[in-house]
Amino acid sequence: MTHLREIASNVHILRHKVLDVTAALIVGGESALVVDTLSTTAQARDLLNAVRRVTDLPLAVVNTHHHFDHTFGNAVFAPAPIWGHEETAVLLGPHHGEPMRAECQRAYPDLAAELAEVPITPPTDLVRTAQDLDLGDRLVELRHFGRGHSAGDLVVLVPDADVVIAGDLVEESGPPQFDDAYPLEWPDTLAALLPHLAETTQVVPGHGRSVDRSFVQAQHEQLASLAWLIREGDQDGAPPDRVAAKSPFPQELSLIAVHRGYLHLNQS
Ligand SMILES: [Zn+2]
Image (cartoon, rainbow, N blue to C red; front, side):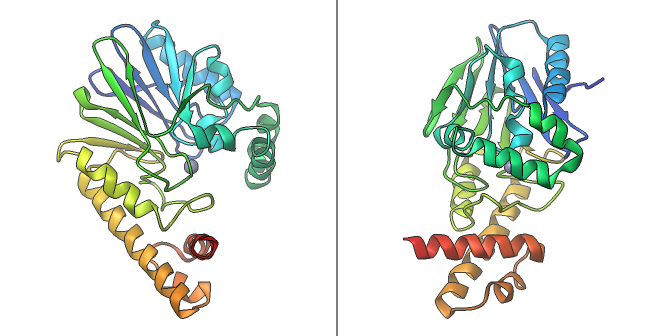
């Protein structure tokens, strides 16, 4: 049985064994907010059961970004409103949702059969930069600080609990993932988040243990140094593998970042 763990007053998290992805539950006086919905219908049903053992209040959902491990359980929560960034809705929409499903099935053959059955469900309630949600005696802030891990990263701030749920903009159990990322913008996005973090703030990453401000600061510095390497490499016409070799992150992942960075620099 899947269980939520209370990390602050009426803020609960669930670290799922598949991909070590984290979902969360924020309970207010009148309603509760589920943050991310895991990878499959069965996982989402487990999450919903765990939620219902904590609260019977009406639910809303928010997706931190479009990736399947954060959104493929959305349908289980219908007819709850699903908040997400405008780009998240596009990336789960008719043009991008099915190609993503196929790609995930190739990347995770063990999940392929379950992924095939998921009704891909984009957010119903869209955010561009900021949206506050009143859960009753508790205000939750949804913020898009810019692009980073994806085009539609949303951060969920719970000021009265001193908790920030960062999605995959911050990663703890593995390095940052660049497949759909904006490596040149990611440092600025974290720089915009940092002033919202106090020394005491618990930052919940998309994958891994909760971290603090200094961890986010350090990840910001690593991402900033990678972004500079990409800009420098582009100026010098350096081959991507030579740039990736200097990156603070693993080679293979960095190579993806360099390719995407070069692409973005040469688009504009
Ligand atoms: Zn992700």
